Image (cartoon, rainbow, N blue to C red; front, side, top):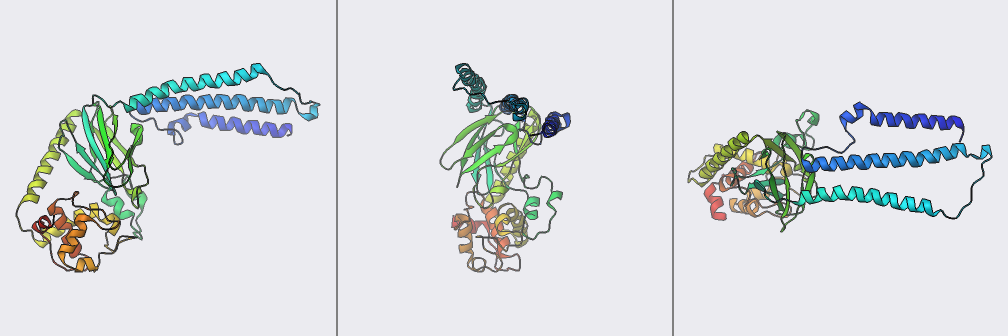
Length: 381
């Protein structure tokens, strides 16, 4: 290699190092590990940076010696390769130094792993259950004890992602990272998560919290977090779980104590009102069922059957389909218990919501096949 080529290589390397270490590059952190907002995530970030700079130092030393050797001992200067068999001193150095580095990194890494696994003495416990393709949250204790709800991809993202929708997804706020109902936790409190699944393996992941936990059917995995900064933090399912794996995001609102208390009261009041409404013996009009059914359909059915009802992939069209045309009892049974790729909704929706969405499917997109009352669903259970 000529001297001019070596100079050009050195200039290129220096430019790369400058760009990597410039304030602008570090400010964006686009290519770096996320720092996060928890002790666990910050510890992981700090360890990551230590490892990075150790690697940079080793790379600079090794490549520096290589480039110097190629330049200073090149053949054109008459250099002759040395011949030697072994050097015990060098061998000891390159054995001991990496051993010390590894031990030095293993100690803080182990401490952080042990910290992440210690979910004892939690202030709040939340059960997280993965479904195809949504999350269910249930507060097991604390101010929000008894609050339970499903969190699904928001309607704006659902509509924009449909085939041939022609939507500009860049105009959709938090496209594929928004949900209809946010999980809420209080600031400064240790929150324990009990993570499981109702069907296949999922994974609950919020990058800013610094952990991912698998949701496995029949098992309960435990983890925790403690966030001191108010804000909204987003994540996703991190385990390939089927057709809509990419469409089951996680959104967590971290609230001040008084805001969380108000939120918990509002949720309990809404749940009580919904339960009373579903338990009433009222005979609902078609218009009422259609209005409620449209919302239930958008949150639970549109992802697979599309807003147009025409279906996609293994999920059939609901437009004039034999199921919709047939007896209401058959339609109710399929929605309650599921069929093939379709999951059962009997445990996810109450009688009123099921009656509403079935009525909506039987009377939309040109269909006109009668209505279903909550008492019909109740009898079918």
